[in-house]
Length: 477
Image (tube, rainbow, N blue to C red; front, side, top):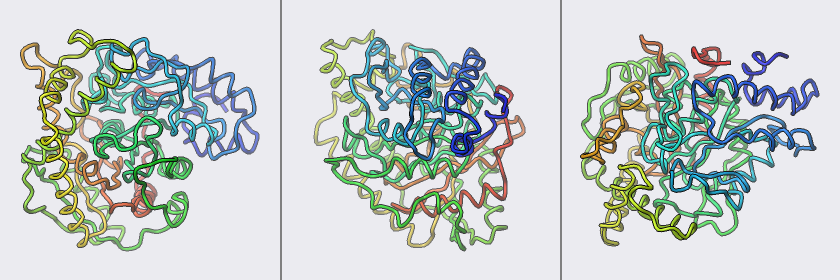
């Protein structure tokens, strides 16, 4: 098969070629490297190539796993790989090299994946775009003047353009679902504790961040989660194991689901007509497939207090991150080392008292119980992913006198996704709609805590009814 034919296959299909010995792992890796070399000058998705190591690994015996020989990318945030530069998008860590592997990276390796590089991310994953000062912006393959989203935007651009069939991402406020929506891909945020954060963290930001991937197919996401899920030694908590492998759920019918639909943001920000249209079209498709679909307006939600509590956790996390890296590197952080927003959030975080932090945690936990109560009346909650289609690059730039403006702008764009991070519930962005400008606009489905199975069954049904794999962006292999 030629490079373009290989690029059109998902990870499961590429692994099947290796399993049938129709393609050697090194051939897959060499083809992926050529695609990165072809497309990366335009997209700036891969910031740390790992080509030599990947070729060496693909030339030797690989573990027999679901993705043996398949090329893969790691987001340059949380996914530490021993001996490889690790920056978290920050100039403060521009020369830092990891001394160990994350548990997730170990599990990727056991699954047979071959990592060919690390992808771009905003500094410490703070903003929902991928434009770090350290590496410059990643561009959306559907329109290179637009953001691919963030913070997993480098991975999304790499997958959407066909550099690799899937790649690592993580999600602390929408950072898998946002770039999946912007780039026309499938993105699942698993249940809190489903994938381990070991060894560096057990409960980061009170459980907001989750690890997984951005994929082109539903089956790839399910099979990868089967390969990586489960606790590591010493976890503070973990999600209850599923009844059966998630890959089996992809082949199962979802049954008749009760699907609640919301197109109004709890924070009161306006929602673009394209994002509403995407949800309405998705809701109609769900009705055609036999599901019970109805309007739902969450009651008694104080959007401002919710936002304040969420931001309290975030700024505390930024302050703790900088303090932690100062200890690891032995360097004193200065304002010049960081982007204006990051430093301003660090100052905010340092000014908070322990009582402020714990009160924010308590409020968000009460809110999570409230959301859990909503799901006694339905199985799945359908909302927009974003309040606008992919925005132009530069939208989140910080003026010198307003360093926190990007955070305020993010609140206008991202009112829907953080709720699932607060509650720990699984949620996914499904690519079922493209607007008049040819830009993808995803729809978000949120499931009950621990119930990825229902989401995978529904996503696979939607994928069969409205296939998206054949839609390729202008910048692609």
